[in-house]
Length: 143
Length: 142
Image (tube, each protein chain N blue to C red):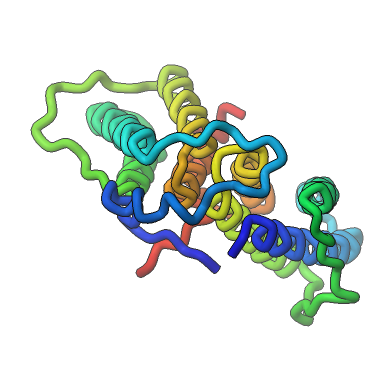
């Protein structure tokens, strides 16, 4: 897989994250958990920024950035703060994994630096969403 | 999805990876380090965690501190290293000194993740940096 392929996969993950956080933000609007709403809004903004950065990077490299899907499948019953938080954490973890894959696909340079920063920031977002600290976020350790 | 498991970043694996993960697409590629540079980097990364483990093991602190030692053991194992046994007496780490030392370690791992020639090594180093910053001892100091 080339660097551009992995960038496209990362962009696809950002498209999905932007969609999911948009939905979750709407669901959380009626919930009394102010901290959750703030975390969702911050995560949404971060993924929009990264999506736009990836689009530019991929274009500069001469490729057409992948487009977002019209919609993404979400589980039913995202009505409580616990359910919304759990879905947000699943989304963020998937992004952390993808940033890790992008780190692995790149050599030293701006793209690697971007991916390392994104991984670090998304790991912090996991904590803001109520996730537990991990020793190696973005790395799958076989059982 | 790629995955990097425990001790996959052994020294012998680095040269085998070196030909397939150059950042050919980067608009302004940095100078390419040699695999030997990765060997030195890996040695330094293991030494960093080994020192932290040794210092934490002689420190008396809250439960989170023993959890931090365990986190570093997991991270060291992922880098193919093992804690020192029978090491000379280490200086304990407490309070603000501990926070500062962990911050330094996280910054070092971030820099090493950016510099590593091997992508798989870089991924583990980036995960170590993020993992350190996730720990309660640094979250409490945010």
